[in-house]
Image (cartoon, rainbow, N blue to C red; front, top):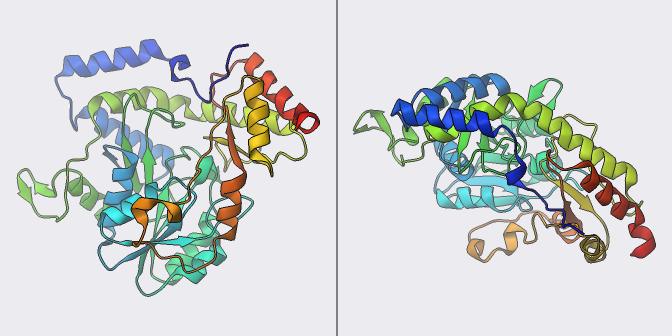
Length: 366
């Protein structure tokens, strides 16, 4: 019985187009911040429905530079969630600000607006809203709450490329939207890459300076805390090839999750795959006995994962530098129940059927 992987990047299509695009970059002799980057920035801004896009080296840099562009730093507090892999917390800590943890909505596992309301103080400078697993958070309510306190919203869209609600896409609600193009993302490069989208003209100018040493012009550093964080031409060229296919790939991901949901035993909860606000970056199931389900799937040759097993407030690296003003009962509960199932556009029909059958028969064999 052949093992079904969580993901398999070797199956990705478009190899001839990608190789041709890479060859074009090599022939051009322009490798950093050239025509491919500027073209991708324009195309991705158009796709997300935003005014500007600034390519950077990776998704975590996107979060860190976004916070700096919004004036966050030592003495600031940034509210986020503790169940999203520590990326937002790491970016917050890197700029000397304090991560503050709000609880999640048990149904969506994204930030709970009522919890955010209780977490904001006079020191709150920004809120990082993570659209986790490809599911848009309650972004309308969260941005309204933050705006009422004069607080900026950073959308962490690393897992939500193309997610939309009422025709409006992830990244277009907050002051900035931050994306990762790590190879396993819905829109993935062939290495690291990231981007920040915004409707703020001044924020866009600041971000362009911060990604390149803080330069106002070449060799003249006018913006503090600048760094070298540039999306390279090869990655931009690959992303330009893939972007037109993103919506089709997202639809395929949702269809896989929909079929899992139809087949699954009652004790296995799966996301609402009919909602375009969910792009199924990860198919995360919930069950009261995660280990039993994981063992059953392993017995059937199906790989699984846990995204994420350690909440941020338990991470050794963050001890003593975060604040947790509210109970995180929903976060704690979710961490014990979640299990990631295989879900990627290139899955074969046989693999999907095998996962469906295993999910369906779990109750008999648990």
